Image (cartoon, rainbow over all chains, first blue to last red; front, side, top):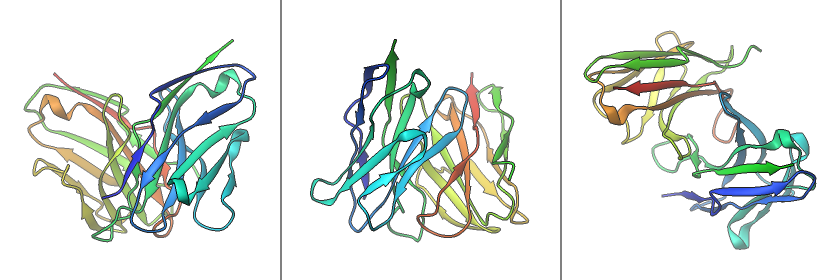
Length: 116
Length: 114
């Protein structure tokens, strides 16, 4: 069965500093990979996704992620964070294998705190 | 495109009661998903529909849970005889197309079972 690991439960970054959130996955085939952000009281918003092709993916709000097959990783990066980036970030892989389901498997999330 | 909506946003109930949640997907989206998110965890897949057909159910979906999408538009998720362990955020998502398409999530229904 597939799985997603986000090793960092919390990360604190100073405003203006660079950010990297880690994501490792286990999947039996070529995965679809996603990063979502969840702010308090808000639904999950897609930041970016990888299906195939260029392994460096650009997303919204200045985020990017790089797919590294050899490391089974899909880390999220941003060169300079803003206070509004404080939120919960989820990495996800899909589709769920077997049975034809194409729901997503999510990691446990990384809580991003921005210091002024 | 008004986004995915869910109703109610919050629900407090007593153990043993039945509750029903509603999800209205983005218009024309043929696939609809239900997830459950507990505190400190990522969303967990429960079930999904393609049009009105329920195609897959997770092992998390016990017999007390039932979901419907009668006309291929809105969907309901009912929990019978609620238990304290059912307390969670229930998320709905919709997508146009198949595997790998972007899933658009609603704001969720937060359930608290006392």
